[in-house]
Amino acid sequence: MESREDVDRWHERALKEREHHGISTNTRPKIIHGVYQFYLRDLDSNWWEFQYDTSTYAQMRAAGLAFNAAPISS
Image (tube, rainbow, N blue to C red):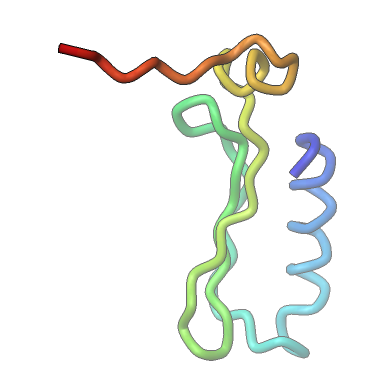
């Protein structure tokens, strides 16, 4: 997701539509390891994760500053 607000909007929607979609579990949004997220479990017992990565690396990646390490040559 693009922001914490997006995560919050989807959480609100999941709460409102839980009966219609058979959502049996819905965690509260919280930050874990730099990621703002919540989980829900659907009618078929599949777990879904909704997240916004707030970590420094995610910010660098979004700004085009992150890089992948080059392979080690012998």
